[in-house]
Length: 297
Length: 163
Image (cartoon, rainbow over all chains, first blue to last red; front, side, top):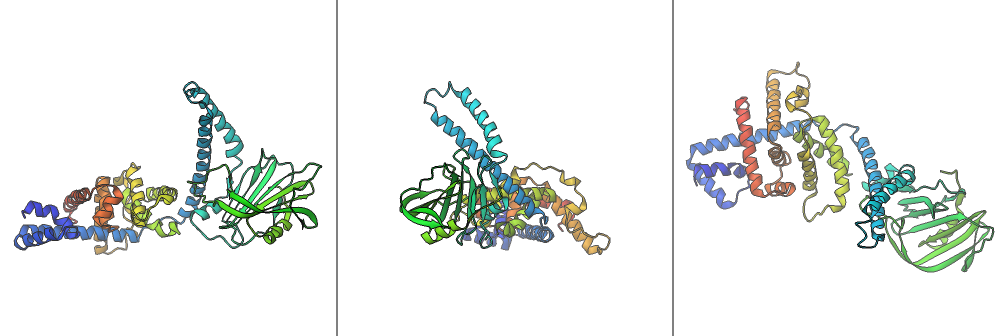
Protein backbone atom coordinates (compact mmCIF):
# COMPACT_ATOMS: atom_id res chain seq x y z
CA UNK A 1 0.00 0.00 0.00
CA UNK A 2 1.32 3.46 -0.92
CA UNK A 3 1.75 6.36 1.52
CA UNK A 4 -1.10 8.49 0.09
CA UNK A 5 -3.55 5.60 0.32
CA UNK A 6 -2.40 4.78 3.87
CA UNK A 7 -2.73 8.42 4.97
CA UNK A 8 -6.26 8.46 3.62
CA UNK A 9 -7.12 5.44 5.78
CA UNK A 10 -5.24 6.37 8.97
CA UNK A 11 -8.17 8.05 10.69
CA UNK A 12 -10.51 5.15 9.96
CA UNK A 13 -7.72 2.84 11.13
CA UNK A 14 -7.52 4.70 14.47
CA UNK A 15 -11.31 4.65 14.71
CA UNK A 16 -11.24 0.89 14.08
CA UNK A 17 -13.35 1.34 11.00
CA UNK A 18 -11.19 -0.48 8.43
CA UNK A 19 -11.67 -4.10 7.49
CA UNK A 20 -9.14 -6.73 8.53
CA UNK A 21 -7.36 -6.93 5.16
CA UNK A 22 -6.81 -3.13 5.02
CA UNK A 23 -5.74 -3.22 8.67
CA UNK A 24 -3.06 -5.78 7.89
CA UNK A 25 -1.83 -3.79 4.87
CA UNK A 26 -1.72 -0.55 6.89
CA UNK A 27 0.17 -2.22 9.73
CA UNK A 28 2.67 -3.70 7.28
CA UNK A 29 3.20 -0.26 5.72
CA UNK A 30 3.56 1.48 9.08
CA UNK A 31 6.22 -0.99 10.15
CA UNK A 32 8.39 0.26 7.32
CA UNK A 33 7.39 3.93 6.86
CA UNK A 34 8.61 6.51 9.38
CA UNK A 35 6.64 9.37 7.75
CA UNK A 36 3.34 7.52 8.03
CA UNK A 37 4.11 6.53 11.64
CA UNK A 38 4.61 10.23 12.43
CA UNK A 39 1.37 11.07 10.65
CA UNK A 40 -0.40 8.40 12.69
CA UNK A 41 1.00 9.82 15.95
CA UNK A 42 -0.17 13.36 15.11
CA UNK A 43 -3.59 12.18 14.07
CA UNK A 44 -3.91 10.09 17.20
CA UNK A 45 -3.00 13.08 19.44
CA UNK A 46 -5.44 15.32 17.60
CA UNK A 47 -8.21 12.78 17.88
CA UNK A 48 -7.63 12.29 21.60
CA UNK A 49 -7.42 16.02 22.22
CA UNK A 50 -10.76 16.60 20.48
CA UNK A 51 -12.41 13.81 22.48
CA UNK A 52 -10.93 15.26 25.66
CA UNK A 53 -12.18 18.71 24.72
CA UNK A 54 -15.73 17.41 24.33
CA UNK A 55 -15.59 15.56 27.64
CA UNK A 56 -14.19 18.54 29.55
CA UNK A 57 -16.70 20.95 28.04
CA UNK A 58 -19.63 18.56 28.44
CA UNK A 59 -18.94 18.14 32.14
CA UNK A 60 -19.55 21.87 32.57
CA UNK A 61 -22.63 22.13 30.42
CA UNK A 62 -26.24 21.74 31.45
CA UNK A 63 -29.51 23.30 30.37
CA UNK A 64 -31.13 25.95 32.53
CA UNK A 65 -33.42 24.82 35.38
CA UNK A 66 -36.30 26.61 33.61
CA UNK A 67 -35.98 24.42 30.51
CA UNK A 68 -38.67 21.99 31.62
CA UNK A 69 -41.29 24.59 32.52
CA UNK A 70 -40.59 26.35 29.23
CA UNK A 71 -41.06 23.08 27.39
CA UNK A 72 -44.33 22.40 29.21
CA UNK A 73 -45.67 25.72 27.97
CA UNK A 74 -44.38 25.08 24.44
CA UNK A 75 -45.89 21.60 24.34
CA UNK A 76 -49.30 22.76 25.42
CA UNK A 77 -49.21 25.57 22.85
CA UNK A 78 -48.11 23.15 20.13
CA UNK A 79 -50.89 20.76 21.04
CA UNK A 80 -53.48 23.53 21.01
CA UNK A 81 -52.35 24.68 17.56
CA UNK A 82 -52.17 21.13 16.31
CA UNK A 83 -55.77 20.43 17.33
CA UNK A 84 -56.88 23.65 15.71
CA UNK A 85 -55.01 23.02 12.46
CA UNK A 86 -56.32 19.48 12.31
CA UNK A 87 -59.84 20.71 12.76
CA UNK A 88 -59.44 23.23 9.94
CA UNK A 89 -58.03 20.59 7.58
CA UNK A 90 -60.82 18.19 8.46
CA UNK A 91 -63.45 20.83 7.85
CA UNK A 92 -61.85 21.89 4.57
CA UNK A 93 -61.70 18.27 3.38
CA UNK A 94 -65.28 17.69 4.37
CA UNK A 95 -66.29 20.76 2.41
CA UNK A 96 -64.43 19.55 -0.68
CA UNK A 97 -65.84 16.05 -0.38
CA UNK A 98 -69.34 17.47 -0.42
CA UNK A 99 -68.82 19.24 -3.75
CA UNK A 100 -69.74 17.32 -6.93
CA UNK A 101 -66.71 16.39 -9.04
CA UNK A 102 -66.03 18.61 -12.01
CA UNK A 103 -67.46 21.63 -10.35
CA UNK A 104 -64.41 21.97 -8.17
CA UNK A 105 -62.59 24.52 -10.32
CA UNK A 106 -65.64 26.71 -10.57
CA UNK A 107 -66.13 26.58 -6.90
CA UNK A 108 -62.55 27.23 -5.83
CA UNK A 109 -63.37 30.79 -4.89
CA UNK A 110 -66.31 29.51 -2.91
CA UNK A 111 -64.15 26.96 -1.14
CA UNK A 112 -61.59 29.57 -0.21
CA UNK A 113 -64.32 31.83 1.04
CA UNK A 114 -65.90 28.96 2.95
CA UNK A 115 -62.57 28.05 4.52
CA UNK A 116 -62.05 31.71 5.41
CA UNK A 117 -65.47 31.84 7.04
CA UNK A 118 -64.80 28.54 8.78
CA UNK A 119 -61.52 29.90 10.08
CA UNK A 120 -63.26 32.87 11.59
CA UNK A 121 -66.16 30.83 12.97
CA UNK A 122 -63.98 28.07 14.31
CA UNK A 123 -61.53 30.60 15.68
CA UNK A 124 -64.29 32.49 17.43
CA UNK A 125 -66.44 29.60 18.58
CA UNK A 126 -64.00 26.79 19.03
CA UNK A 127 -60.42 27.86 19.22
CA UNK A 128 -60.41 30.77 21.58
CA UNK A 129 -62.60 29.73 24.47
CA UNK A 130 -63.27 26.14 23.87
CA UNK A 131 -60.79 23.31 23.59
CA UNK A 132 -59.22 24.10 26.88
CA UNK A 133 -56.89 21.18 27.08
CA UNK A 134 -55.41 21.09 30.50
CA UNK A 135 -51.76 21.29 29.71
CA UNK A 136 -50.31 19.41 32.60
CA UNK A 137 -52.60 16.48 31.95
CA UNK A 138 -51.82 16.26 28.27
CA UNK A 139 -48.12 16.56 28.89
CA UNK A 140 -48.36 13.86 31.49
CA UNK A 141 -49.98 11.66 28.87
CA UNK A 142 -47.32 12.49 26.30
CA UNK A 143 -44.61 11.62 28.73
CA UNK A 144 -46.41 8.56 30.02
CA UNK A 145 -46.31 9.86 33.54
CA UNK A 146 -48.28 8.14 36.22
CA UNK A 147 -51.08 10.30 37.45
CA UNK A 148 -51.87 10.29 41.15
CA UNK A 149 -54.42 7.66 42.09
CA UNK A 150 -57.97 8.77 41.47
CA UNK A 151 -57.16 11.68 39.20
CA UNK A 152 -57.33 11.53 35.40
CA UNK A 153 -54.13 11.75 33.41
CA UNK A 154 -55.73 14.37 31.26
CA UNK A 155 -58.95 16.20 30.74
CA UNK A 156 -60.50 17.69 27.63
CA UNK A 157 -63.08 20.38 28.15
CA UNK A 158 -65.31 21.28 25.20
CA UNK A 159 -67.55 24.35 25.19
CA UNK A 160 -70.76 24.23 27.14
CA UNK A 161 -71.48 27.92 27.65
CA UNK A 162 -74.83 27.62 25.79
CA UNK A 163 -76.09 25.07 28.27
CA UNK A 164 -79.34 26.16 29.92
CA UNK A 165 -79.14 23.84 32.91
CA UNK A 166 -76.65 23.02 35.59
CA UNK A 167 -75.27 19.53 34.83
CA UNK A 168 -74.50 16.81 37.34
CA UNK A 169 -71.02 15.43 37.90
CA UNK A 170 -70.17 12.02 39.35
CA UNK A 171 -68.36 12.16 42.67
CA UNK A 172 -67.48 8.49 42.40
CA UNK A 173 -65.57 6.85 39.53
CA UNK A 174 -63.89 3.44 39.40
CA UNK A 175 -60.12 3.16 39.85
CA UNK A 176 -57.86 3.30 36.81
CA UNK A 177 -59.34 6.54 35.43
CA UNK A 178 -57.10 7.86 32.65
CA UNK A 179 -59.02 10.69 31.02
CA UNK A 180 -62.19 12.69 31.10
CA UNK A 181 -63.95 14.48 28.26
CA UNK A 182 -66.63 17.01 29.17
CA UNK A 183 -68.57 19.45 27.06
CA UNK A 184 -71.66 20.57 25.22
CA UNK A 185 -73.01 18.51 22.32
CA UNK A 186 -76.05 18.67 20.01
CA UNK A 187 -75.62 22.39 19.49
CA UNK A 188 -74.59 22.64 23.13
CA UNK A 189 -78.15 21.76 24.21
CA UNK A 190 -76.87 18.59 25.85
CA UNK A 191 -73.91 17.98 28.11
CA UNK A 192 -71.73 14.94 27.48
CA UNK A 193 -69.20 13.47 29.87
CA UNK A 194 -66.88 10.57 29.18
CA UNK A 195 -64.72 8.98 31.84
CA UNK A 196 -62.41 6.20 30.80
CA UNK A 197 -59.72 3.79 31.84
CA UNK A 198 -57.76 1.28 29.83
CA UNK A 199 -60.60 -1.22 29.53
CA UNK A 200 -63.66 0.68 30.67
CA UNK A 201 -65.67 3.76 29.81
CA UNK A 202 -68.70 5.61 31.03
CA UNK A 203 -70.54 8.06 28.81
CA UNK A 204 -73.11 10.29 30.45
CA UNK A 205 -75.36 12.52 28.36
CA UNK A 206 -77.58 15.05 30.12
CA UNK A 207 -80.20 17.26 28.58
CA UNK A 208 -83.05 19.41 29.74
CA UNK A 209 -86.15 17.27 29.93
CA UNK A 210 -89.56 18.25 28.69
CA UNK A 211 -92.53 18.14 31.07
CA UNK A 212 -93.34 14.69 29.73
CA UNK A 213 -90.71 12.35 31.14
CA UNK A 214 -90.99 8.92 29.59
CA UNK A 215 -88.49 6.20 30.48
CA UNK A 216 -87.43 3.75 27.80
CA UNK A 217 -88.36 0.10 28.13
CA UNK A 218 -86.02 -2.07 30.19
CA UNK A 219 -85.38 -3.40 33.64
CA UNK A 220 -86.70 -1.09 36.34
CA UNK A 221 -84.11 0.06 38.87
CA UNK A 222 -83.87 2.87 41.38
CA UNK A 223 -81.27 5.60 41.70
CA UNK A 224 -81.48 7.57 44.95
CA UNK A 225 -85.15 6.59 45.05
CA UNK A 226 -85.76 7.92 41.55
CA UNK A 227 -87.11 5.52 38.92
CA UNK A 228 -84.68 4.45 36.21
CA UNK A 229 -84.48 1.84 33.49
CA UNK A 230 -81.58 -0.40 32.60
CA UNK A 231 -80.91 -2.00 29.23
CA UNK A 232 -78.25 -4.70 29.06
CA UNK A 233 -76.55 -6.78 26.38
CA UNK A 234 -75.78 -3.82 24.14
CA UNK A 235 -73.04 -4.24 21.54
CA UNK A 236 -70.97 -1.75 19.63
CA UNK A 237 -67.90 0.40 19.41
CA UNK A 238 -67.36 3.43 21.55
CA UNK A 239 -65.11 6.40 20.70
CA UNK A 240 -64.59 8.96 23.47
CA UNK A 241 -64.73 11.79 20.92
CA UNK A 242 -66.78 10.46 17.99
CA UNK A 243 -66.18 13.00 15.25
CA UNK A 244 -62.58 13.87 15.85
CA UNK A 245 -59.51 11.96 14.79
CA UNK A 246 -57.20 11.93 17.76
CA UNK A 247 -54.16 10.38 16.08
CA UNK A 248 -51.12 12.55 15.78
CA UNK A 249 -51.94 14.78 18.71
CA UNK A 250 -50.33 12.68 21.35
CA UNK A 251 -53.85 11.85 22.54
CA UNK A 252 -54.12 8.14 22.51
CA UNK A 253 -57.73 7.69 23.55
CA UNK A 254 -58.78 4.08 23.17
CA UNK A 255 -61.69 2.86 21.05
CA UNK A 256 -63.71 0.32 23.00
CA UNK A 257 -65.51 -2.66 21.49
CA UNK A 258 -68.17 -3.80 23.93
CA UNK A 259 -70.43 -6.83 23.87
CA UNK A 260 -72.30 -6.40 27.13
CA UNK A 261 -72.87 -2.69 27.28
CA UNK A 262 -75.55 -1.25 29.55
CA UNK A 263 -77.64 1.85 29.34
CA UNK A 264 -79.18 3.53 32.32
CA UNK A 265 -81.78 6.29 31.93
CA UNK A 266 -83.37 8.42 34.64
CA UNK A 267 -84.49 11.95 35.46
CA UNK A 268 -83.11 14.26 38.12
CA UNK A 269 -85.48 17.21 38.33
CA UNK A 270 -85.39 18.95 34.97
CA UNK A 271 -82.47 16.88 33.68
CA UNK A 272 -82.69 13.66 31.72
CA UNK A 273 -79.59 11.52 32.27
CA UNK A 274 -78.46 8.69 29.99
CA UNK A 275 -75.48 6.60 30.94
CA UNK A 276 -73.76 4.10 28.62
CA UNK A 277 -70.96 1.92 29.91
CA UNK A 278 -69.20 -1.43 29.69
CA UNK A 279 -68.80 -1.52 33.49
CA UNK A 280 -70.83 -3.81 35.75
CA UNK A 281 -74.37 -2.77 36.71
CA UNK A 282 -73.22 -2.31 40.32
CA UNK A 283 -70.48 0.13 39.30
CA UNK A 284 -72.84 2.03 37.01
CA UNK A 285 -75.41 2.40 39.78
CA UNK A 286 -72.70 3.54 42.17
CA UNK A 287 -71.61 6.24 39.70
CA UNK A 288 -75.22 7.22 38.99
CA UNK A 289 -76.00 7.55 42.71
CA UNK A 290 -72.93 9.74 43.23
CA UNK A 291 -73.97 12.36 40.66
CA UNK A 292 -74.40 15.83 42.07
CA UNK A 293 -74.71 19.34 40.64
CA UNK A 294 -71.67 21.57 40.82
CA UNK A 295 -70.90 25.21 40.27
CA UNK A 296 -71.08 25.90 36.52
CA UNK A 297 -67.49 25.59 35.25
CA UNK B 1 -38.94 10.39 31.62
CA UNK B 2 -37.81 11.27 28.13
CA UNK B 3 -36.87 14.85 28.91
CA UNK B 4 -34.90 14.03 32.05
CA UNK B 5 -33.06 11.25 30.31
CA UNK B 6 -32.07 13.05 27.12
CA UNK B 7 -32.03 16.77 27.91
CA UNK B 8 -28.31 16.87 28.67
CA UNK B 9 -27.41 14.97 25.54
CA UNK B 10 -29.58 17.17 23.32
CA UNK B 11 -28.37 20.35 24.98
CA UNK B 12 -24.72 19.40 24.72
CA UNK B 13 -24.94 18.36 21.07
CA UNK B 14 -26.74 21.63 20.33
CA UNK B 15 -24.13 23.62 22.24
CA UNK B 16 -21.29 21.96 20.36
CA UNK B 17 -23.08 22.46 17.05
CA UNK B 18 -24.27 26.03 17.59
CA UNK B 19 -21.48 27.25 19.86
CA UNK B 20 -23.75 29.27 22.09
CA UNK B 21 -25.61 28.53 25.32
CA UNK B 22 -28.71 30.57 24.47
CA UNK B 23 -29.03 28.98 21.05
CA UNK B 24 -28.57 25.57 22.65
CA UNK B 25 -31.45 26.38 25.04
CA UNK B 26 -33.68 27.27 22.10
CA UNK B 27 -32.58 24.13 20.30
CA UNK B 28 -33.46 22.03 23.35
CA UNK B 29 -37.03 23.31 23.22
CA UNK B 30 -37.47 22.83 19.49
CA UNK B 31 -35.84 19.40 19.44
CA UNK B 32 -38.08 18.09 22.24
CA UNK B 33 -41.19 19.42 20.50
CA UNK B 34 -40.06 17.52 17.41
CA UNK B 35 -39.22 14.44 19.45
CA UNK B 36 -42.65 14.28 21.05
CA UNK B 37 -44.36 14.79 17.70
CA UNK B 38 -42.21 12.15 16.02
CA UNK B 39 -42.33 9.67 18.89
CA UNK B 40 -45.14 7.54 17.39
CA UNK B 41 -42.99 7.13 14.24
CA UNK B 42 -39.92 5.86 16.07
CA UNK B 43 -39.01 2.40 14.82
CA UNK B 44 -36.66 0.52 17.13
CA UNK B 45 -35.94 -1.93 14.30
CA UNK B 46 -34.39 0.84 12.24
CA UNK B 47 -32.29 2.73 14.76
CA UNK B 48 -31.24 2.86 18.38
CA UNK B 49 -33.17 5.46 20.35
CA UNK B 50 -30.02 7.49 21.10
CA UNK B 51 -29.16 7.57 17.40
CA UNK B 52 -32.69 8.70 16.62
CA UNK B 53 -32.52 11.49 19.22
CA UNK B 54 -29.11 12.60 17.91
CA UNK B 55 -30.49 12.56 14.36
CA UNK B 56 -33.36 14.88 15.24
CA UNK B 57 -31.02 17.14 17.19
CA UNK B 58 -28.47 17.27 14.38
CA UNK B 59 -31.11 17.89 11.74
CA UNK B 60 -32.40 20.81 13.75
CA UNK B 61 -28.90 22.24 14.28
CA UNK B 62 -27.94 21.76 10.64
CA UNK B 63 -31.03 23.69 9.58
CA UNK B 64 -30.19 26.64 11.78
CA UNK B 65 -28.43 29.73 10.64
CA UNK B 66 -26.07 31.02 13.22
CA UNK B 67 -27.61 33.93 15.07
CA UNK B 68 -24.33 35.20 16.42
CA UNK B 69 -20.81 35.35 15.15
CA UNK B 70 -18.91 32.92 17.34
CA UNK B 71 -15.75 35.04 17.22
CA UNK B 72 -17.63 37.72 19.12
CA UNK B 73 -18.30 35.35 22.00
CA UNK B 74 -16.96 36.28 25.37
CA UNK B 75 -14.33 34.05 26.91
CA UNK B 76 -16.85 32.69 29.38
CA UNK B 77 -19.28 31.79 26.63
CA UNK B 78 -16.60 30.33 24.44
CA UNK B 79 -15.43 28.02 27.16
CA UNK B 80 -17.43 27.16 30.25
CA UNK B 81 -14.15 26.17 31.89
CA UNK B 82 -13.15 29.79 32.25
CA UNK B 83 -14.75 30.34 35.60
CA UNK B 84 -12.15 32.19 37.58
CA UNK B 85 -9.22 33.26 35.52
CA UNK B 86 -7.50 35.25 38.27
CA UNK B 87 -7.02 32.30 40.55
CA UNK B 88 -5.87 29.90 37.84
CA UNK B 89 -2.30 28.70 37.91
CA UNK B 90 -0.25 28.93 34.72
CA UNK B 91 -0.98 25.36 33.63
CA UNK B 92 -4.67 25.86 34.06
CA UNK B 93 -4.53 29.04 32.01
CA UNK B 94 -2.77 27.25 29.21
CA UNK B 95 -5.30 24.46 29.27
CA UNK B 96 -8.11 26.97 29.15
CA UNK B 97 -6.46 28.74 26.27
CA UNK B 98 -6.21 25.45 24.42
CA UNK B 99 -9.82 24.63 25.13
CA UNK B 100 -10.87 27.97 23.75
CA UNK B 101 -8.75 27.47 20.64
CA UNK B 102 -10.27 24.04 20.02
CA UNK B 103 -13.76 25.39 20.59
CA UNK B 104 -13.16 28.15 18.07
CA UNK B 105 -11.53 25.80 15.58
CA UNK B 106 -14.55 23.52 15.81
CA UNK B 107 -16.89 26.45 15.33
CA UNK B 108 -14.99 27.53 12.22
CA UNK B 109 -15.59 24.16 10.59
CA UNK B 110 -18.35 23.78 8.06
CA UNK B 111 -21.38 22.59 10.05
CA UNK B 112 -21.63 19.33 8.13
CA UNK B 113 -18.05 18.54 9.09
CA UNK B 114 -18.66 19.65 12.68
CA UNK B 115 -21.65 17.31 12.89
CA UNK B 116 -19.62 14.20 12.05
CA UNK B 117 -16.85 15.22 14.46
CA UNK B 118 -19.35 15.60 17.31
CA UNK B 119 -21.07 12.34 16.50
CA UNK B 120 -17.80 10.45 16.33
CA UNK B 121 -15.68 12.04 19.07
CA UNK B 122 -18.34 13.18 21.51
CA UNK B 123 -21.13 10.65 21.05
CA UNK B 124 -18.61 7.98 20.00
CA UNK B 125 -20.98 6.56 17.42
CA UNK B 126 -19.63 4.11 14.85
CA UNK B 127 -19.44 5.34 11.25
CA UNK B 128 -22.44 3.23 10.22
CA UNK B 129 -24.67 4.85 12.85
CA UNK B 130 -23.45 8.33 11.95
CA UNK B 131 -24.26 7.55 8.32
CA UNK B 132 -27.71 6.36 9.30
CA UNK B 133 -28.42 9.32 11.53
CA UNK B 134 -27.33 11.87 8.93
CA UNK B 135 -28.72 9.88 6.02
CA UNK B 136 -25.42 9.85 4.15
CA UNK B 137 -23.19 6.99 2.91
CA UNK B 138 -20.48 5.62 5.22
CA UNK B 139 -17.88 6.75 2.65
CA UNK B 140 -19.11 10.33 3.10
CA UNK B 141 -18.73 10.01 6.87
CA UNK B 142 -15.11 8.91 6.33
CA UNK B 143 -14.31 11.69 3.91
CA UNK B 144 -15.97 14.36 6.08
CA UNK B 145 -14.04 13.19 9.13
CA UNK B 146 -10.79 13.30 7.18
CA UNK B 147 -11.55 16.80 5.92
CA UNK B 148 -12.60 17.96 9.39
CA UNK B 149 -9.50 16.66 11.11
CA UNK B 150 -7.25 18.13 8.44
CA UNK B 151 -8.85 21.54 8.97
CA UNK B 152 -8.66 21.25 12.75
CA UNK B 153 -5.03 20.16 12.59
CA UNK B 154 -4.11 23.11 10.39
CA UNK B 155 -5.82 25.57 12.68
CA UNK B 156 -4.51 24.12 15.93
CA UNK B 157 -0.95 23.80 14.62
CA UNK B 158 -1.07 27.48 13.62
CA UNK B 159 -2.15 28.37 17.15
CA UNK B 160 0.51 26.14 18.66
CA UNK B 161 -2.05 23.95 20.39
CA UNK B 162 -1.08 20.71 18.74
CA UNK B 163 2.52 20.09 19.63
